[in-house]
Length: 211
Ligand SMILES: C[S@@+](CC[C@H](N)C(=O)[O-])C[C@H]1O[C@@H](n2cnc3c(N)ncnc32)[C@H](O)[C@@H]1O
Figure 1 (spheres, helix red, strand yellow):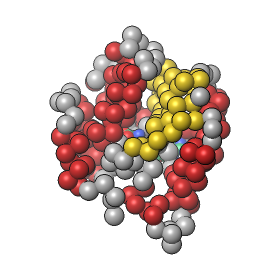
Figure 2 (tube, helix red, strand yellow; figure 1 turned 180 degrees about the horizontal axis):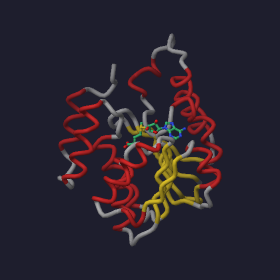
Figure 3 (cartoon, protein in one colour; figure 1 turned 120 degrees about the horizontal axis):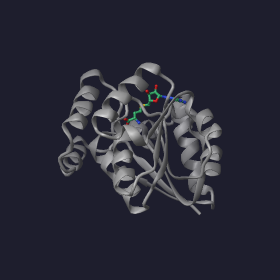
Figure 4 (cartoon, rainbow, N blue to C red; figure 1 turned 90 degrees about the horizontal axis):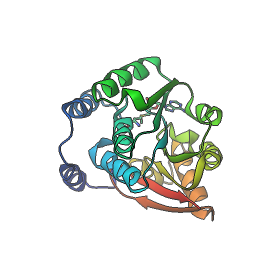
């Protein structure tokens, strides 16, 4: 059961301004095959935050076929250019992303990597202005120290699925993913090194600034 009512979700999506046909096609494809993209309202917030902080170096963990990447790339381009790292462990998804992001005109600023994403972040030189995390939820807790090391002071972390379709509220759900979301939330909200809030858009985004 999703804690954010369908009516609210649809309303928030309806407030997002029109976007290129290629992005609409990516949204339609997700719906058709049931692929978990962040969707328009969360994507637009990611774009907005990246614009707010003037992000020019962005690292994304768990990029899928590049829908969330497109929102960050748009912000980075409008901020004057830079790099957005697209990382996913599937070659096929990486290839699809190249097609979509090339068609959107972002080819020049995306760095593609087919890899486990936390390992890729470890191996990539920072610092980053913004890191977005959307990997398998059981991997969230272990990603935090690596993210903290690679983000610049004042940099922003956005992490998706922090309401986890309401499963976090069900004490009988002790699956690795659900425990991963709970544990990550506990760690980041109790760590004085971060200012973190949970924004209940779609499936919940944690928006955090590294002090
Ligand atoms: C939720 S989807 C991401 C969608 C994308 N962020 C978007 O909103 O358009 C997560 C993707 O990352 C992949 N993934 C999950 N955990 C990963 C990891 N640890 N390393 C690399 N890729 C991962 C999944 O297989 C899936 O393709």
